[in-house]
Length: 398
Ligand code: NAD
Image (cartoon, rainbow, N blue to C red; front, top):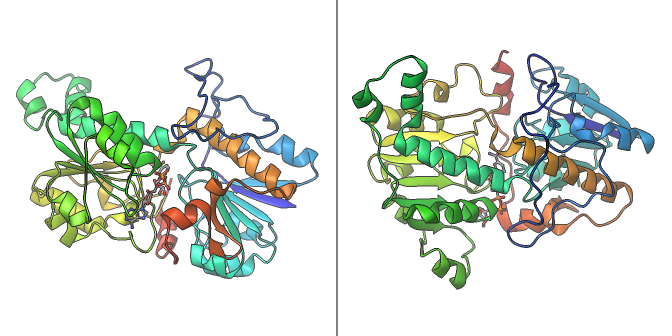
């Protein structure tokens, strides 16, 4: 079979010769008891760069020894991309949300052999899920592999935005010492109201991690948490997003991108937020309206916006979120720490082993199967597509 793997570019100065840590801490299982990936074997060293082109997700030896062909490229956008050329006769496509290969209906129509699209990570909105259902292409992802990684990034971003770390770090780096400049936008999170849109694996982990800061916790989700968890974290459940955002100082967004959540935070929703609130969005860029966020930061309706997700990706060089005031954006990195890469590379291998051996893939990994939403897809997504406009990714110039 032919496997097309679309990964992000190598470091600009080549693959590292050494790493900051000699090994990764051992994680026994995920918070809900689910086991970490269970491939028969791995051919990579956990803690090394695996998500870039030369890292190859550690898959080449395994695939070639089994007689398959592996093609790896980062060239994915614009007319005649390498990925588009290779997709035409590929059986399997692997892509990561950090450097998403937008698998549109048009591309699927040309990919006559394509059977499965694997997301090496979490969040399969870069695949037109409706078209995948219509073409009987299965879509799977490595559920839980980086949920904790992202929740850590959320805590970092809440603290850094509310305390205004970025301003203070810039002053220190530039040789300055004006304390008043450094603290004129700096607050404590203690006592604040913090709410999450969605309390799935990431949202719940973010709530748990914020609890020791002695804040008031809120959530909105289409699936209510158990009474035990609500009690343990002293959570306030909201029936609507509007009711939650009206009382929160910080809103963190943790739902998948699908037709129900696309453009959820538009000018109208933002106008219903508490004045001066912060948004932390590590879910997907398209859940927030690009211009409405920038305008709310300009007017002061929002005090800050941080996250690591953009639309499209890579973000065009002139994307307004790169230059708007009081932002704390990173490129899409939260779910691709070296720790996370080891888990999703192993999870991708587990999925491929099941696929080749015609064994069932864990239901938690399923998004689309047999022409329908399945597993986590049925729980967390809705039918339809959220890929429109992705061609703008070709505007990014290195
Ligand atoms: P999950 O499936 O455990 O949780 C998703 C939650 O969203 C579920 O509880 C579901 O009920 C809820 N939800 C779905 N649609 C909703 C709606 N319309 N309104 C309210 N709630 C809704 O997934 P997770 O592991 O928590 O990941 C969530 C999302 O975070 C992913 O789909 C992905 O988009 C994003 N993510 C980002 C990164 C990153 O690197 N930045 C990494 C992993 C995941």
